[in-house]
Length: 337
Ligand code: NAD
Ligand code: UDP
Image (cartoon, rainbow, N blue to C red; front, side):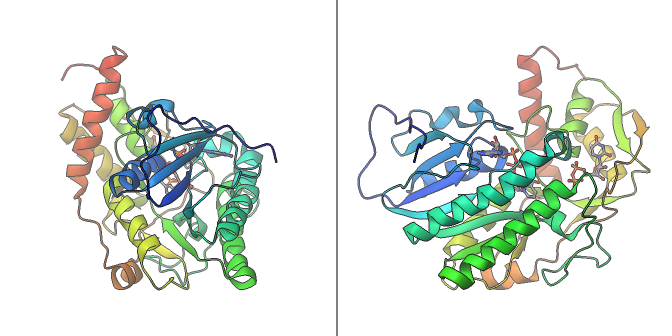
């Protein structure tokens, strides 16, 4: 097999560390998870093809003795790695404009990429975590959404490449459990935000914060009365780590998200307040199939993982605003209050 060439750092690994592989390591969530696992004593192989990820997200790990980067597209098989105990699949664009830009690539990343990673984990007898998504619930008729809800997804719409790709990835996960006994755990991740999101990510938090800090109008899609529930990245990473560490493998997917629900108009107002800017808004059309509401039922995560989010929205947003303000200042685009 023609695998990627790992880029090892100069000092070489420290001995006796358990080994984890993170696909999507240069992305927003993947880079935070890589940092967390290394802090916890893991040797981490970060895999990414920089489709939406950025090298700067991993700059702080570049010379770390326990971090190895492999530039690789997970739609191709991965090389065996000695001592692999955890395989994480976070490789997939998560922002609607990014995942809709190359929809076939998005769908095949979730289906073929997940298949390749499941095979790797199965051969290595490693635990596997799939980051699925609240999008598999589609435009939900049940509110809040428990894991038992089977969703309301348009199979032919512009979001289907992502939603249906993730649904197929979940199906593959449980087929590997049944057929090979692979230790698979599935996280259904709800909207998550924080530092290291891209300025051009296109999702609500990055758009509104960047617009507020550069003196532009905030783009409200539709009426702005649709809702989402926003989880800070540190809370999400804690939930993911608990999911892979819990001894008894959960038999179903587990929702991970913050159950506090806000309308888009409320988010615009809060970001205005926290940035100290006078907010002006403009209304753009609602994208096709945009879910009207979304809020996780996290009773299962509370019970199985003893987990719930701790970071209040205003605290998480303040840290995120600082991150974007720094990026915009570097680019000379930050507008004074
Ligand atoms: P992101 O776009 O920042 O990160 C995804 C990473 O995967 C990027 O670094 C990208 O370059 C890489 N990637 C994409 N296709 C690849 C391929 N074929 N081969 C190798 N690498 C590839 O997104 P994120 O917000 O960090 O999301 C991470 C995971 O969490 C995704 O699986 C996403 O579906 C899931 N998720 C995220 C959210 C959220 O709100 N952030 C919500 C639900 C689910
Ligand atoms: N949204 C908005 N303006 C923006 C970006 C997003 O009004 O500039 C809305 C979008 O229509 C959706 C919600 O905010 O209703 C969350 O969108 P996002 O893309 O962040 O995530 P997702 O739709 O995948 O939950």
